[in-house]
Image 1 (tube, rainbow, N blue to C red):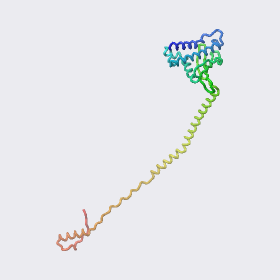
Image 2 (image 1 turned 45 degrees about the vertical axis):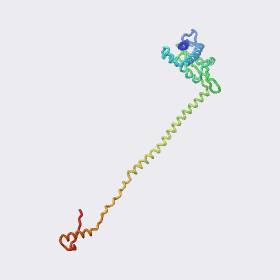
Image 3 (image 1 turned 30 degrees about the horizontal axis):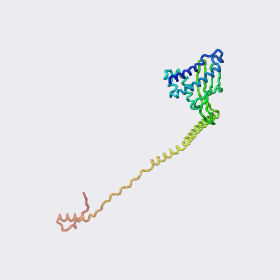
Image 4 (image 1 turned 90 degrees about the horizontal axis):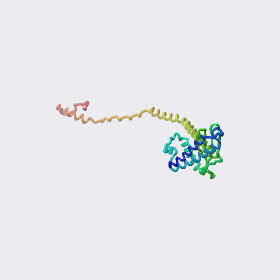
Length: 255
């Protein structure tokens, strides 16, 4: 397994450094259009083969570099390129071939920008197979960057743009409606506060309940006539009188 991975990586590294030794007759001092096209298309093919090998053994590019004793920082270009390819493959599926006739090469003074069109097997609308673009930027030092992105039709791009616009505007309007509802509630808050204040004032100003007057103690009126007669008879007896007619009891004090 490790040997096969090392072979794939070595081939990719050779391609990445392929442009460092240009011929004497070049279009910008270090590379021609044909050389740039060949290097970019070979890079796309090697990325596809490397992805299949990594998938077979369930490894990521970073894990492979670490396993082989390499430095992930030094292999950052290869790791980024592989991650970009894997992400894009979720849209275009598995690599089928390079569409060489659709490769575009733009040569400037300091770099060559190559866009390689590849064919995937992922089916989308109208039974079409999804394509992808592998963009390779080549400088005098070699390949500078590699990015892979699915190729969407104009109708798909317009649909996505419309959906994004609707989603963005819908979110904005929803927030505005929510804010307007909150602002409208400010009119009711003072009324609610005033209502609670009125209830509190009524409770404070209400007179204290008057306690019912306790019923006056009922003075038991007793008939003292018999008691007076008894007292008078007792006094008359003690004095030796025959009757108590001459005695008058003016008051009785109970203790």
